[in-house]
Image (cartoon, rainbow, N blue to C red; front, side, top):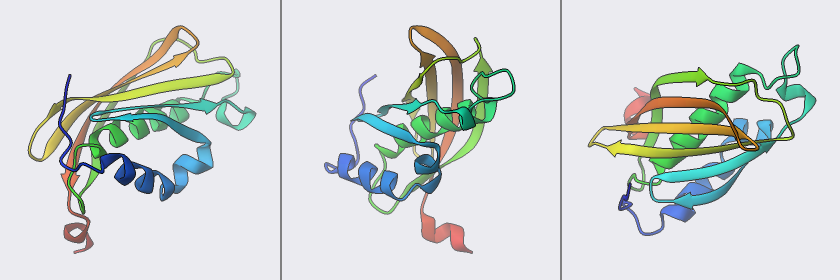
Amino acid sequence: MSFKPAETDFTEMVKEKINGNHFLHYLGFTINEIKPGFISGELDLQKHHLQQMDFVHGGVTATVADIVAGFAAFTLVKHGQGVVTVELKVSYLNPAKGDVLQAKGYVIKAGQRLYFCESELWVGDLLVAKASLTMAVVNPEDMRR
């Protein structure tokens, strides 16, 4: 799909938002590619990302799916706006076991107030999870009431 960002400096907007996302940094997730309506990145897997059977924890998987979809949606908003997740469904397709979790998120439909997004998570050439998300476009000052 091809989307036109609302702002010409959307890449800088995303990078600034990434710098302020504390949980993303805590996890160790890095963004590799930024395009209108698309984000990709990766997580070098560490012991603290794993559950008791040494698979990537489902919460980590859901979080990464949310991160890439959210930032994909954020590439399309105007200055001063943000996006928040209003719905998230994750399908865990295969156990995630390996060294690097790769993720891509993309917008499939951008409405006025809601963006419908998907995420894919891979370990090597194995698709380990797919997510469907709805993001709401918000004005942060409206949320402080």
